[in-house]
Length: 324
Image (tube, rainbow, N blue to C red):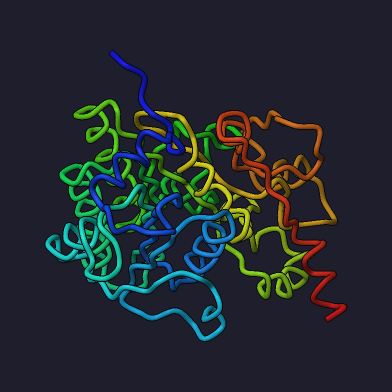
């Protein structure tokens, strides 16, 4: 079997030029669709991809915020629950493009209890299915999906894990939202079985924080129980965007799951070991790094395989807010 071309393979670019001879000066750019690109995380993923030279299209039901008007990405109104719209958008948008190279799927009802249970599950699982099936029939080989830390069985307290930090093999959904996320992972696995040349990476992202959110972190510094529900973890939206870019750029093939969280916990007065002993006294904790405040969601795999390196810690960001 011949080697699978990487995302940056020039032969693939040549093939696209044959399919789209009118591509013009943008032909050397890799074309990426970001679903939910107007959302809290989506806007940062769009920025990340644009900043790294990609031709980006934001697929959403809501236009980008006014703050995003200077970002060089095009907005396309798409209802991802409609399979026909999804296929059509991947294949051809008049005066816009023909064909895409990769898809980053973020769009969803963003958390449990945002709608009735069946609505959350139906909406989120249907959108994911439509993306995966449309990618298959249109030949898109590079797909990254937003999964969730909720697959671990949040809240971790009182549903204590069997070990800490929590790693990717843990699957214990406790809500219709997390069940839909796990079903997205399982569907991804089967789609890659059907076509081993396809790469589908599921990112189990932690609690996403925008820069302005760091002003709240001081409010829980004296109450460890406030953030025990997800092992005291968070993920900066910009670092999360980095992870999605790395997933798309990776030379991996097949199905993969990666935890994505920041390298530190959301507390500064106590170490991770102290907090773990307080909240999860019966759960074995084996540190993975020499950082005394490492997260209780393991990002070892993402660092080693994807090259993920979070750069925005909450204390530095909170200090910036104070100076502003």
